[in-house]
Image 1 (spheres, rainbow, N blue to C red):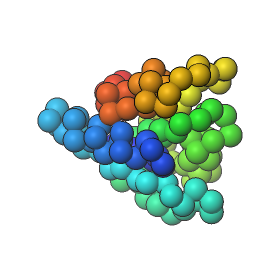
Image 2 (image 1 turned 120 degrees about the vertical axis):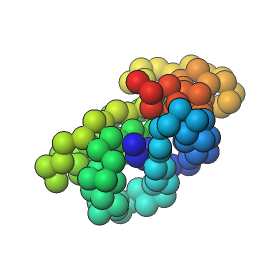
Image 3 (image 1 turned 45 degrees about the vertical axis):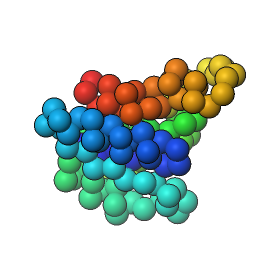
Image 4 (image 1 turned 120 degrees about the horizontal axis):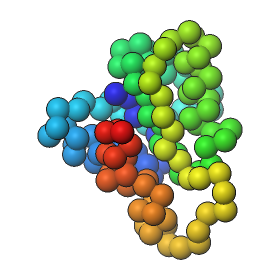
Length: 117
């Protein structure tokens, strides 16, 4: 599986990769520091090589990184299993960031759960 993320969520994805490795699940974590311009070739290569993509983003999923990745994969005609882990499209809670990351699943535990699902 490929996990595409950026910013603070990269550490969560790397920690999740280590956690699920014990269960025989291999994750490729791509740090999407290249959000603009988006690197289509690396996304297409990841989709072809792993066949499963999870995007993890610390904002609303609409119009975000997950949508851009989905568009690239769809336009390339590649059939993959795809899921976005992001904040809900709703008013979010107000709290210190570590509490929010835990609440919305943007931690190693949350990413691991998304990978397994």
